[in-house]
Image 1 (spheres, helix red, strand yellow):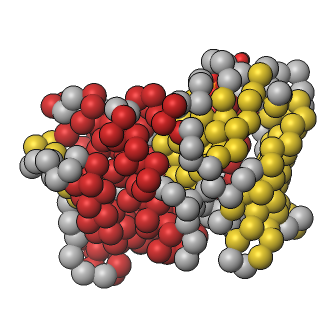
Image 2: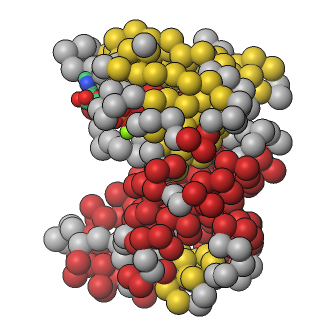
Image 3: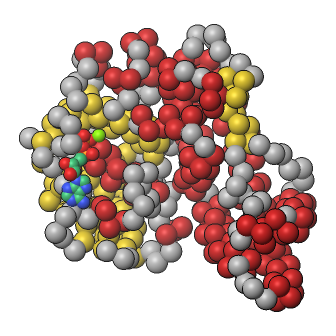
Length: 360
Ligand SMILES: Nc1ncnc2c1ncn2[C@@H]1O[C@H](COP(=O)(O)OP(=O)(O)O)[C@@H](O)[C@H]1O
Ligand SMILES: [Mg+2]
């Protein structure tokens, strides 16, 4: 998968700019706050229909404008593809090859990308929310079924949560099991997919980590809980959990069990990485997860994703930098940095200088 061309119109600090990307390494350079990450963010948005930096799409619209447009021309194994997102204050339009796709699940995953920035340290160090988000965005890019299940699950969850706040207890008790039935169905689909994904991720991430640390440390990634059996069995198990937690859920006013609460465990040499590992270790572990993601996307879709490395090179020591760059040779890469680091000189690359939302 290659992004050949990217056009940003009234997107963040870009008024109207066209990027022509090379097949290999593309280096976006420029001072701080000029628009390097904004460009990377636009590519990621076309892959996931979302951005890691925003709560509301409207933040993406250039101040003072009423809509933003991101357009890209890709080259995939199926031939040329165009993607476009037109973002308004409260709605958006998504297009694949010029055709409007009303459901975002039909848009997501037409292009895949792996995004790595210093913020990804939160994957290792922060609470479970970051890790769930990582899993959801990652799996959604390769499974439409997962993305669709997530949408349905969230809708039903909201309805169950509303019901839990209902004062009329007899009404709650009468209707909750019907919601639980539905909720468990999608919960099981999500859980099963996550388990399959994690099994792959774990083995690939531990290999990548071993490569990055010269075999000095061992990284493992696993779901907090493992469910046995197929979707039906998992649904039955989750339904039981929902019933068992009803009393507590009623007291708290929200649903306390299910995939929206599940965490994954990242361990280094058997110890929970969260809380104990150093910045350097967290960085390496996060990088290993990202490299594993690249491999999973490549094997699932038959072509490599676009790798976005936002401001991470300067955070890695020289040996790791070299290892990273040699590992991703042959993959299209969009890399941002404040100055083209010396280690890059020699690597075939295209440099794009950005200043004030413009290519200079
Ligand atoms: N919606 C927006 N409208 C106009 N400018 C924006 C918008 N969102 C962000 N910016 C500007 O974009 C710049 C930051 O761009 P960014 O890509 O994060 O910088 P960097 O080059 O350091 O990666 C800031 O100057 C910010 O004010
Ligand atoms: Mg930046």
